[in-house]
Image (cartoon, rainbow, N blue to C red):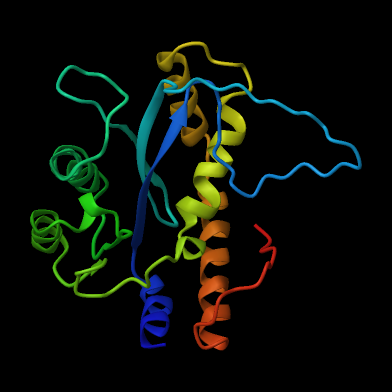
Length: 222
């Protein structure tokens, strides 16, 4: 419970929560809990490409703004890439830190999940050099509770929100999809982000009151 109490208090300073997500060109979203209920066999077939073209997108979020999107590419400028440690550290060094410097953000706390590229020793060393003890991560100075996507605004808000809008005009190319992602994220107002963070702190308060037990299916108002 000390983790949750500490995290709740940290919102007196800036907190940056960050994550990446895949955006498939065909609009396919992997929803394992999607079910079709019918008295008769609906005989529904959904055809999807075996390897759909996609973008891998990274963002950081705090109450004041969103940094990003950043689109991962390989050395040949191809979009469909796996985020490994080298690409993640290059993004931190060449994109994220310069963006922070441009916005003159002081005393920022950086939080990330436990993906392998995030917690490689070289990555943790880079983040410690940048943020010191203000790092919330597996193997970081402040440990983040594992398997806690319900406590990460990018997972429970940002990616779903963006994906609900970027396919409205049925983009046919990755460049078109990329432009849509940039536009939708740029249109997110600070007032909405403030509500997202208020919702985030409500989740922390609930977890703290329940002594860290799993959250039931509660709808949090945004």
